[in-house]
Length: 461
Image 1 (cartoon, rainbow, N blue to C red):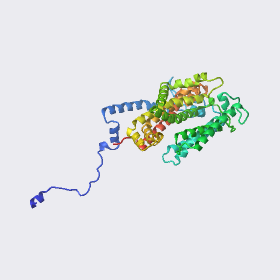
Image 2: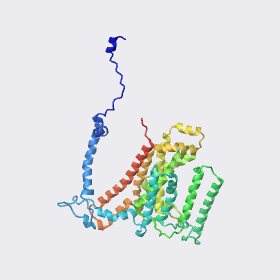
Image 3: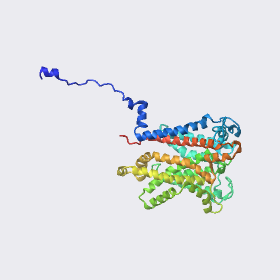
Image 4: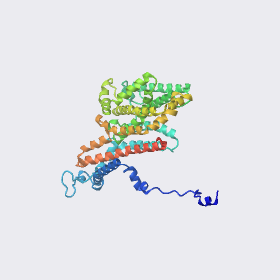
């Protein structure tokens, strides 16, 4: 290369990296977020303007009624019966009457549960929180122990505390007279003899062995049956607690009993039904399809009405079931049918290679489902599962038609009390109910999003 070429060579090689430059102002900060999320297109801009208009016309009056113009102290209806200065009928009353809610708050929670026995309900609520919080925290230890606590110990203790125990099994099945623990009642001894035989049969099956895995389906079913048998034995003993019939339960207690029981029962039932609908055995598939389509084709209000009014007509004389128990069974079966379809969608979304890979390594059917298929399927349909749970929680309000006063029903029953009869009583009560339902449903929704993000169910590019 000549000297002239060397002097005119403009080749440049950078020997160090430039510092990272900040993004453009229009794409960063608050302005960038607004542009990306609210004004990214003309259609989104239109929707944003409409949403802002709705918020402007709805939120300020709601805040005025609920907070700024509300009555916070007072005794009786006179505290909330005063109009604003210069006001005229019918729209110029003061805002929400919160003293009314405070006066009825205990009834909204416990219903007509005896006041001197409400400590039992409080213990049940505390035990539920003690078990639920560690179960929902991913990093909490002893998950297996916690699961056993919530699946076995808590339901037994909750049923014993809320009802008082001392159940009359002989009268329930129509073969015994008045229940007397350790007495001479024939029905009592027959029931206990049957339960003892069930426990003995299960113990014999475990002693003979049905597989080394404690999650073996046969052992699992037998274990559940044994746990139920032991539960029946315990609930038949008189612990000295006052028996509180479910007919006087009410308020948030009934709502949580229905919702928690329905949620806890519908998920495993839905999994079994979804697997049965995809089974290769025609009889199993047929019965699962019939069950799912039948319950999905009937409104829940019809299910509750049939369980409360029509079912007793088909039972033998002298045989009856508790009204709350009938509602629990109806709600659980109804929700299980919808849950089955949600889970079936997750099963169908799993690639065929996952099934073939599990078969290739020699996994049995239940091992394949428990270890490979179901974890992936349930992860994919977390939004659908939680959506079903939220719908079930809100549908518990329908039990009012069969005479069970849940949270909303208890609120409506308070309207007959003339002590707090004002033009704003119903509006205040329904606003309070809406806030309570929103807290529960929103909490479930946010935990669903948290679980999705933790498991990274989304397909990232």
